[in-house]
Amino acid sequence: MRTIAKIVAALAASILTTGCATLLPPTAAPSGPPVTVRDGTLAGASENGVFAFKGIPYAAPPVGNLRWMPPRPAAAWSGVREARAYGHDCMQAPFPLDAAPLRTEPSEDCLYLNVWRPANGAKNLPVVVWIYGGGFVNGGSSPAIYDGTRFAQNGIVFVSFNYRLGRFGFFGFPALTAADPNGLLGNYGYMDQIAALKWVRANIAAFGGDPNAVTVFGESAGGASVHMLLTSPLARGLFERAVVESGGGRDDLMGTRRLSEDLPGNPSLQTIGVNFARSVGIDGTDAVGLAKLRALPADKIVDGLNMGTMSPKSRPQTYGGPIEDGKLVTRSPQQTYQAGDEASVPIMIGANSADLGFFFPKTKTEAFASFGTEAAQARQAYDPTGAAPLRAVAWEIGMDQMMVEPACFTVREFSAQGLPAYEYRFSYVAPAEAAALDKSGFGAMMGIKGAPHASEIPFVFDTVKAAYGEDTTPADEAMAAKMHAYWVNFARTGNPNGGALPLWPAYDRKADTLMDFTQDGGPVAEKDPWRTRLDVTAAKANKAEAAAARKGKSS
Image (cartoon, rainbow, N blue to C red):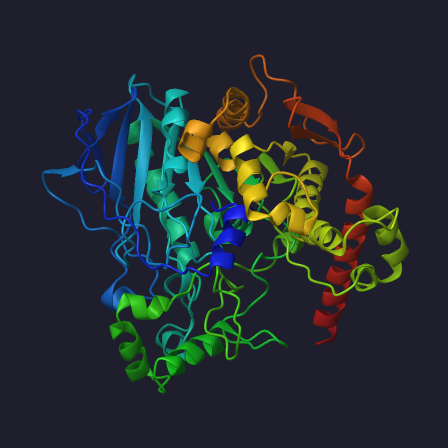
């Protein structure tokens, strides 16, 4: 994932690239024993004491008439298929200076997954499935920091996969609805995620994995995707544990949008699809118009869309993101959790100490006024001395509303229902990360300090050397070893504790304890030091939800 410092540096430079490295050639590493899955036999590579199988098709290429269709089964093959190189990451305009740069050339033909397994031939091993972030417009499974080797070396079968992004992954059009009014529509990227998990269920035993011990985890848009999987009726029974890293937990991260119903100030996915068609000179909304859209080259569909350009600077809007479609996504995570209708599985969830948030008030008075009757409490919580810079106050409010408090809300709801739930906060900043922040001037500009959005990922994967290279420190490696061990333990048992690690207590509302991965003291279990300000933010969110519910009943 990209870090805040690199996002800001990229935006400041205004360099929007559309190219990336070519597809990796097969490795020269020796082959491991072949594995036979549902569609044929695979030959992977022996790497660092594990067997890696890359570029495995889990669905048919979504091209031609399969563009904007639910994923179809992959075709079977005869003989032995080489599985030594990543398949294409999904079509996108790669984000410049990405902290997790793609290592393939993006393509529409991208529905591939990768599996790492221990080389010892063990069976019935726990399985971890990773879902990358990137705002649903960027990302892929090929970046070096997403390598699954360390998980496999620690007895886990690790899986990563690609899912459709941008206008390929989330798109509505009248002719699509007319052709299949009762079918799955719009959320094609989410459909890919469910298809990948079904593939895992059906095939992972061939790699030594236990199909009944699957943990899903993801970050940012990937974390939001885990919330979708926890709440979707179409994902039930596909996993047994879940981890959400900076993925929110109350509303959908991209906002509430419908397939064909235009909401005030929020057009439907169909309206947005028609806007896009008109932007490329296609006026018809019938089957002829759809055929013209499907005939467009893939780069014309992307049209420069990425993390730096997804917020429209002008209207009409031409990209919409995920929607509540009534079948796959039926309501917000908050509504589902409060009703107790989520998948009943253990959860780990948290956010970073300088996480992502979008809130841009013109004055501090305006910022605190957004809390309504709790304005005075908000001022006391966020700016008790009155000396905090506006930008710092706005950033803290924004990240609390978007990432930090929703994680707290989620862990409280799961715990209240008797489900094992563990909360974390990632506060560690690698020296290389701190240097990048200082160089960009972002921290000083915003008046904030802490761990940026997505900076925990190489510690979870224990791939800090891939992230920081020669600038990696012994402290980085020590923190990565501990954080990775907690994630491995959770994948094994649904409890992150084990070995000589500091005790991470299950969440209890009265104790309000989380695990803070601190700068100097390592992992420290402590009562949430941000409770006062998070309670103010929670009150605001609960009032907004109640008002929305009343409005829904009245309409």
